[in-house]
Length: 614
Image 1 (cartoon, rainbow, N blue to C red):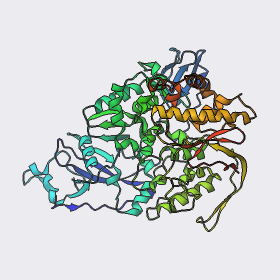
Image 2: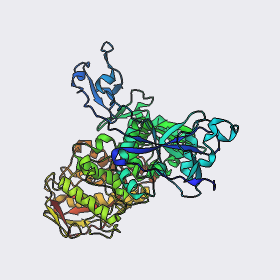
Image 3: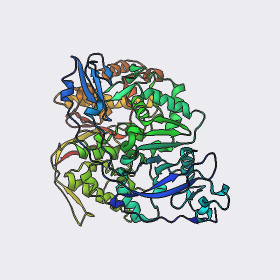
Image 4: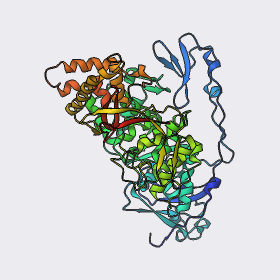
């Protein structure tokens, strides 16, 4: 390829909606990859408000209700036996889903393309791809044409080349068709990566690219002996459930409806799944925006095999929520990002409580990988509230410290909230910035809390010296830490026996301090188990009815009555361990002077005050 010059990008204006598209020219086997580039303009899609489902509800027989899945599909649910249906339960009613949820109109002239979601992978050895100038003679090999053929006017000597990483080359080769071209948007080659100004402007609008794509294609990498089996298993599991706003119900197409609560899969089936989910794509930061914005029709491809993201995502939800036959099956099954990614939808990130939505994205992506820590902010701009996103303009000339500081200030100014302070862990931070600037690259995760000491009151906070000085906050002392357990959690749950030691130590410590609570004994079980699994402090219990405190406490008392340490096999089938192994934690367990319990940051010490900030 030495005779071909390096491809030179022609300028585009991302602020005006312009983008580059790459067309993979026909070919097969290991033949040289040939592509052509074109410019297009994305036009905003006008979102129309969907009709209310109340009139549809009025047409249903008794016992039925109509609602939406998290993806916006209409589903009918029978309240008594949890039967579900895609069709109206009254066969005489003329029902068409498109009348109630019309598809958004595509603007005239909108380009049709697919967007690729993949892991960049190793940098070497790079592989060249040939870039044909202008519109190439599709399906024709210039080398095979006779000298006088007019179609030979595009001599291969006029072609240029690009060098791409091996994983992208493999993806393009597997996506290439033999008989017709295929047009894609691929970040590594459709953005001039050496042009930092273009890169920053394009990153700010990347969410719109994936939203406008006809389909998102996920490339996991080359096939292995059991990768196809793993995809089949995940798709099978995912076909069993539908996810509503806060409920999991059997899918109308379910073959095993009981898997929604008890997924009866064995170690042999989960072995290939565990290996597949360990692939780099699942732990990559940028995929959150890419797959959430384009997930409804997305396809996941490994080698030549493809499955729908729609079902694969639900398979991940069941593996996370359902009880497995043995809690030890969760060991290494779902990486930390996969504990949260399957639940993220466009609606959830732009919900009414939008400030909490941003915090949830930060929490969920904390262990996702990226090479540039500035992307800890930039990579979810397409998902977050537009008011906040408009305050942040990606700029790769800024230092990471400056990007994170500006993000904190934008959040504080937009929402008058100090919720981001919970990400300012002092033990793990490596950021050369004031301690109120969250080090998003080195977060020590605690359970995702859904309560705030200050409720929804506006924060009173000021920062000196133009955002680089001391953060002054008005707060009220709520109580003081009386005792902290010597057993701290540092990440994934340890062995079954050691996990039991942690839970037992915390439980007995909390029980001893419970006598100081004004409601001693009355809510102890609820208070302890809500703290352990949700990180809630006991005087504020949201959705308390969903916590299976009675089940957990019954098991706990039975285990404590045993004279010897319970065997690992016995612990592995308890509800206590089934729930404990669902989350990573970086937490200290503490009791307060008033008898409350909590999961605090690593390094929590006796005598420290817990404050509500207003």
